[in-house]
Amino acid sequence: MTDFTEWFDAAFAGSPLMAILRGMGVERSVALASTAWDLGLDHVEVPLQTEEDERALREVVRLGAERGKVVGAGTILRVEQVAAAQAAGAAYLVAPGLDPAVVRAAQEAGIPILPGVATPSEVQLAVSLGLTWLKAFPASWLGSGWFRLVRGPFPEVRFVATGGMDAANAAEFLDAGVRVVAVGSALEDAAQLEKLAALLASRSAV
Image (cartoon, rainbow, N blue to C red; front, side):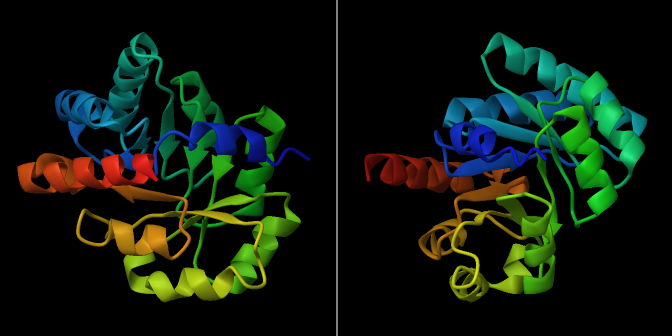
């Protein structure tokens, strides 16, 4: 059983923020991926929901390779998407929920996966599948207090907070023990970019 702990530990060691480029098309995805990388966000996720998304993923993967960045594929809901995401060049997968069949398919394919959880039962199931890194979704609905409480019985689990995250609440969730906060539309807001840059600077200085 592959847990991918070391891969995610190393991948997310450089930055506590990642970018999600959902349904933005090829040109906007490329532009915002470049914005994220320039800002210091090492990781970009392109959710796969349409053929256009797959084209965007392939192009962002290509540009990421030129800059030494790996790119993930999100919204992995079905087993067959694992192979499709790999074929498009994704280095890791992200799912909104926890489907053991999808997790096992990723493990068998040797590609790291970050499944979504929102309850202690789902966290426990993910741990039983050999996973340590999990996506908490929707994080803004769960609230930062959820992470402080869940860390009690699951101190070994590392969380990526996704859903409703931006420059206004990212620090709150990081302070609650979240390892990475994923932002989306904030990358198109100049005011938020400035705040995200400041947050990255403060966290790297710690």
